[in-house]
Length: 257
Image (cartoon, rainbow, N blue to C red):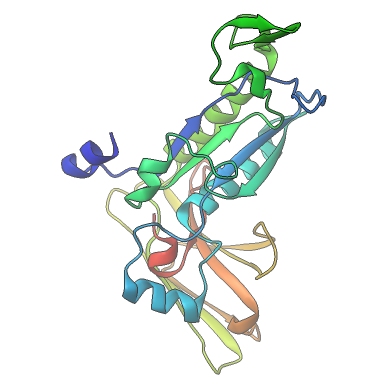
């Protein structure tokens, strides 16, 4: 599918891989119906040598489009859902394992995995059987319909938010080395008729989520005075007239959707 998407020139902004979204009882004995994990890879797998060199000097190891897609999912959940906490996991997938978003990540398409927090390994990759009093296999009695519905709703609000947003800002760049300021520039793509304007974002480099933002209107640059670029990460999102908003786009090739 990823190869076909590239061949056909599809412009995919995000792949939501829902793999195991209905189990709430883990093999570790924990029952949890109010938390979901979202796995996201950092540095792009298809990064070129030149892009890697630039990233070393400007940042972006934790600001791939997949990571900012994960942050977007969490922000949507915080705004629109109750009794659901998103645990962002900064990793392609579970330790040493993989999922169906991985082939998309491999070719540079943003993608995340959405799944339960506490897995029950006796129900995974097992033939249906009972041994020594333990039942193995994936059967309907392990499905919690309310939890599955909740995670389905998480997908719905994420897709609705992205579909209702304007085109993503492109060619986001930043400058400000050896200056007491930081200047962001970006371009507006075609077909941006529902664009209300742009929001600039910034956070300390150790913060996992975007902590500060400011709506700056229909402009294509913004300068932060007395904000040293060395100390923060920056990004830009596009806001629609109805309030729908894109994920944050980090600067350069590292953050490009």
